[in-house]
Image (tube, rainbow, N blue to C red; front, side):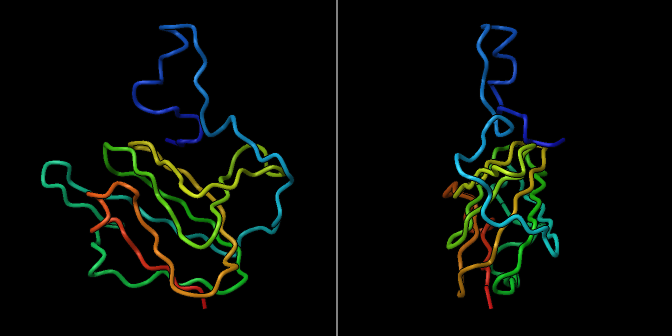
Amino acid sequence: MNGLRDPGIGLRDHMQRYGRRVLNYGDIRNLTPTIDKREPTRELQLHLTGNMERYVWGMDGIKFMEAEPLMLKYGERIRITLVNDTMMTHPIHLHGMWSELETEEPDYIPRKHTILVQPGSKISYLVTADAYGRWAYHCHLLYHMPGMFREVRVV
């Protein structure tokens, strides 16, 4: 399912139960117009994987120590789609570049440091590779980092 309108576990039925609206990613928009309006030249899809019983985490079923770096070309516009195959929310963070959440408002795309990926859902965002170097890309939950970690290289 698309996670754009999913407020998360424990908040999904707030309107029915308490009469309160819960904001979700579909409700936010940037205060200023989208800076880079180019269409992405390619898409990268990553599955967030893991075993909650064994506390083994990964991206595409691969642990960091076994993973190749994700390669980006300087200046390219890329769409990253994260598919959460686990039953936990994962806050995913890319260092050095903005993550621009794809919402229903393409002229005012919100820029975020960290993207929450709800359990059993997918979400996509755009990245402009505007910073040369080697960057960390990981889940912000400390006990997930050994597996849910990648190096991003912008060349």
